[in-house]
Image: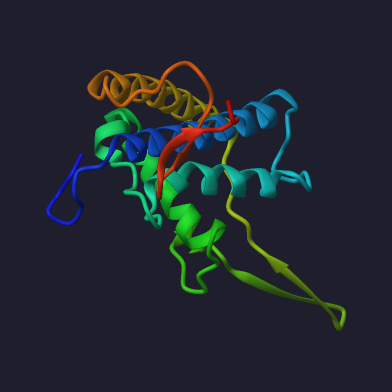
Length: 186
């Protein structure tokens, strides 16, 4: 896909983008599976790092990157997941990858609110961390699995659209600066 801002992408760029996105969505699916199968709840010390990874990895293909266009959400994210997609991007942007002091509201409070707790003259601190309920984790996994399949189809589509660009059997490095080259010397 090209626009006035971006020239048409090459075979290598389209393959790189789709494969990189596939890898990110695969990690999101694995993290969701882990939370669900191990019954990790929001109080577990590993929960917030997993939820953060889910948001960051999910959003990665949709964010600007040096050397490659971002994945167009409207083209790949099914309409039934648009609200969830927007929520994941917002959480990534304001609380997971960046900790905005003036973030959006979550349950009526700023998403990144810091707490000062004073009890009997003793001071403690707390920090709110946004998470997802089990139903949302399941939906995120479904979205990730849908996108994994769409990226697999995209890789195959790119191969069909550029039949003369596809190399012979072997393993290759997709280098966006120099093109495709053998991974192992033959």
